[in-house]
Length: 271
Image (cartoon, rainbow, N blue to C red; front, side):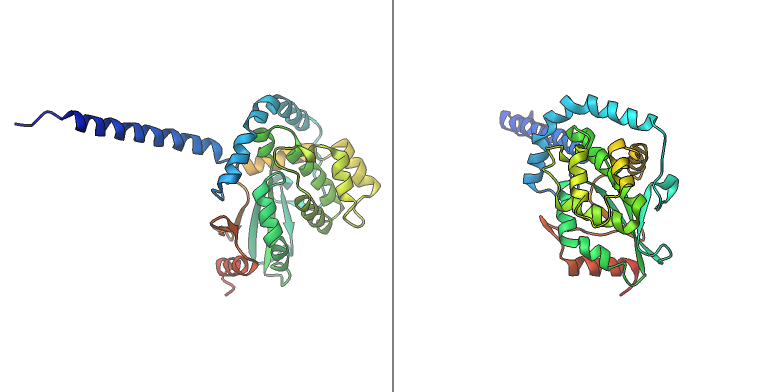
């Protein structure tokens, strides 16, 4: 005859059930957080994201209104844009046999770490004409953190792209080098963006300045952000080479230029 469970066994079962329930809740919370940070699990980064959660709720209404206004304005696609509906920016030779896809958000602090470590390497990998880079730019942090900095920077980048792909890349690099704290909406100020554009020789033409101030490329920026949202990529930065994901971090550290280069060449079959 089976014996009735003892009180000690009941306690063990109850404790196990509580642990399982806590794990289930943590998994649900992790899914909600993944749009902010997915490539590393550094506690400090998650703490930053959690500290900014209040700003999301208080500013999301303004962000939604700004986004709606952008999509209702006439769509102007900058020169040199490519891909479906002009939402992809290609750097390097268009006929290069291999493609590196880079997914980023200008407010993403982890993107800044990646760019600081390997941005120049990305550029060098295009120089022999074997690899081209396709930039897929996001703006989800505006909704997650509140504000409009990602979309405003992206619209300004459209104005730079209209001036030339090299001007885009230089401005892209300047933005990451001068990225504000993710909890601040520094890129939401067009005058600040224009000041930063002054670091790119020849970029601040009258046409560029007018386009940034008038937010000419805001509807395009909204299309680019929508394309990222539909891409299936769940966080930034993400890099793929010929469709194969590249590891960008080893623990909490960004991979070295040598490690990054080796991965890219292996994925492209260039080793």
